[in-house]
Image 1 (cartoon, rainbow, N blue to C red):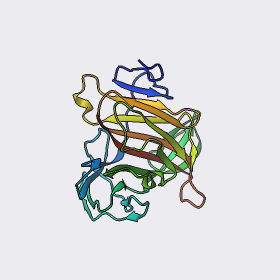
Image 2: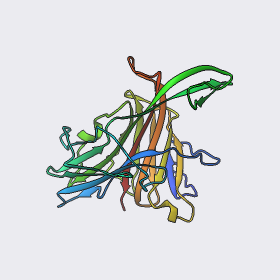
Image 3: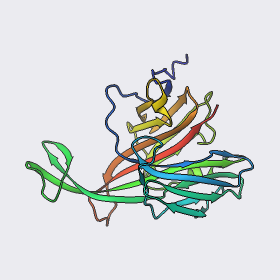
Image 4: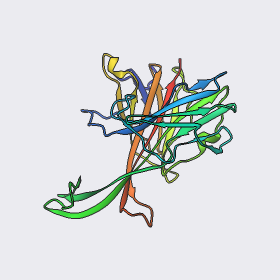
Length: 268
């Protein structure tokens, strides 16, 4: 066994990361983009589903983004050919006219506005208009989410991968359509283009409910904001990270809660 990639009981290997011990905290709803294929040869169209869920990839609530779009292999922006919105899921379709990598994204989606209060040194959500007893500070907050997936036709290209969407970015170093069981997936977590060290990252796998031990990992980035991952099982995975920061100048709230996710396939 390579000591750089210690095996865990989940059948997942990780380098440059800290596997958190203890119980798994309850997950909030996370948005995702899930294409029907990740690599194409003769296929001329791709279908993508988008939803919020707590269990990947079972749609629970449709993503109501107004910024769904496609980044083409040359790095330019295009719109989806079809966007069909339902209560639990959005179904999107796009042609694959060029060879190369396509990035399918929700774009930047801003969500609900809420408040948090500092009570006994800890921030907690405010229910209703009144701050809880003992609150010494109240801040307004808004969610901002981005969900991505990549599909490559014939051969990978970098332009869509290197384009940043939103402030909180999952930046693949390894091309996201070039991840294999015998290789690794290197990536960095960036905020405003700068690495986030010691940043919590959560990884889930489709169909994990059928595993003897359900797959779920929580890792932390290294000093350079990086993770180097290897996998023991092929399949479709979701990687997600959250970060809270002051909102940009001129915003209607004090801070924003950022969530970014990436759906990818580990190939045999």
